[in-house]
Image 1 (cartoon, rainbow, N blue to C red):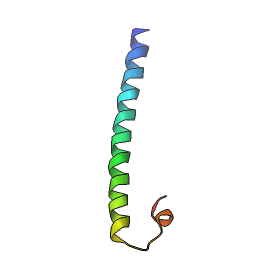
Image 2: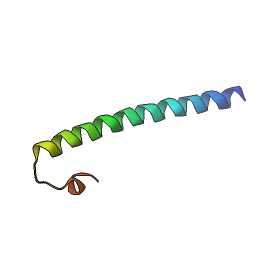
Image 3: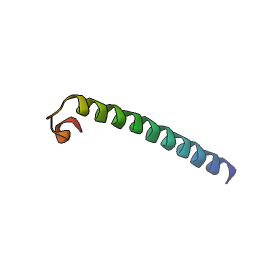
Image 4: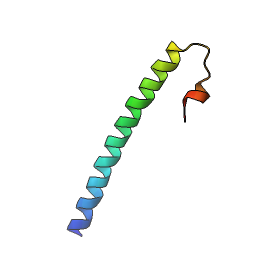
Length: 46
């Protein structure tokens, strides 16, 4: 039980890091799209 919970906690920590990285990436994308005026947002996003 103890080892299992520690694994679960590490997964949650990784998930939080991934979300923060994703937030930074989307922030950079939005700033880029603002620079490229008239360019469709759909084409920039994957």
